[in-house]
Length: 307
Ligand code: BDR
Ligand code: CA
Image (cartoon, rainbow, N blue to C red; front, side, top):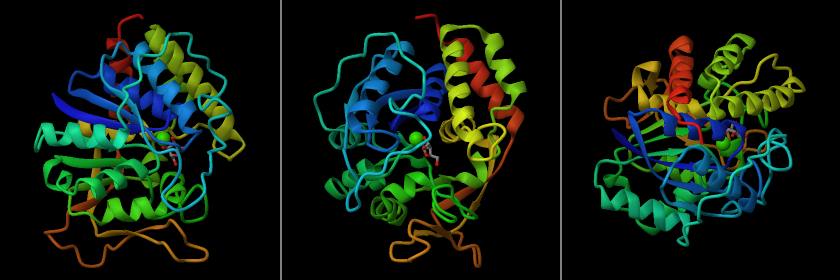
C-alpha cells in the first residue's frame, strides 16, 4: 500500500477525496493536515476531524496555516458557510493532533524516506512552509500529486484556478522544487463530472458514507449550476485516484511555473510544452478514464464499513 499525506480544506470534493483514500486498500492515509481555503482553518479542520471519524480513520489530523503566505484569505463560494454545503456531519470529531501541520508533514516524510506521496488538494501554504522549514523533504518524498491549476484555463479567473490563486506564492515555491510533481488541474478534473448516472451508482451503494457523498455532491451540484455546469466537476478525488491507479489518467511532462506579477494573469499555471526535456520532473494530467475513475470511487465507498 502507498502511504499518502492528505493536505486538504474540506470542502465538499475534499471530503469525497478523503473517503476515496480511506476506502481504497491500495493507499494508506499516514496523516491528514488542513489549510485555510474553501473555508476558515477552524471550519475545515472541524470538518476533517469529523470525516476522519466517519471513515473510521485512526491517524493524526493536524491544523496548519490559517492564511496564505502573502495575500489576504479568500474563501470559496462553492462550499457554503460550513465548508460542506448543507450537509451536517453528525459524528464526534476525532482528537486534534497538537502539532502544527507543517511539522506533521515534515515528520511523516522524514520518518519514511522515499515512501510518502504528498497529496495537496487545497491552497499550497502548508507544503511551501514545510519545504522552507525542512528542505530535505524534497529528496525524501516519493512524489507530489496535487489538485490545482490548469494549463488551459482557470475557474477563479479566466486563467487561474482557486487553490493556486488563493496562495500563488506558495504554489510558486511548490512548483519550483525538484521533486517529482504531478499537477492534476482543471483540464483533467472538468472530465470528472458527477452526472445523474454517477449519482445513481453511488446512491446504490447505500452505506452511510455513500449516502453522505450523495448529499455532498447534491450540494456541490447546486453551487455549480449557478456556474453553468449541469453536473459538478469533482476535482480533489482525481488526485487521490492518480495515486491509487496511475493508469486512470494520462500525463504529459512540462516545466511548470506560477505567474506572480501579471495584472490579468496572477495565479496562472504556465506549462511549457515546447521542448520536452527527459529530465523534467513535473507533469500535467491530461485525459481521465472516466469510467474507471468512478469505479474507484464506488469501490472505495463500498469498502467503508458503517460507522
Ligand atoms: C479546487 O478548489 C476548491 O474549491 C476545491 O476543493 C478544489 O480543491 C478546485 O478549483
Ligand atoms: Ca480542496
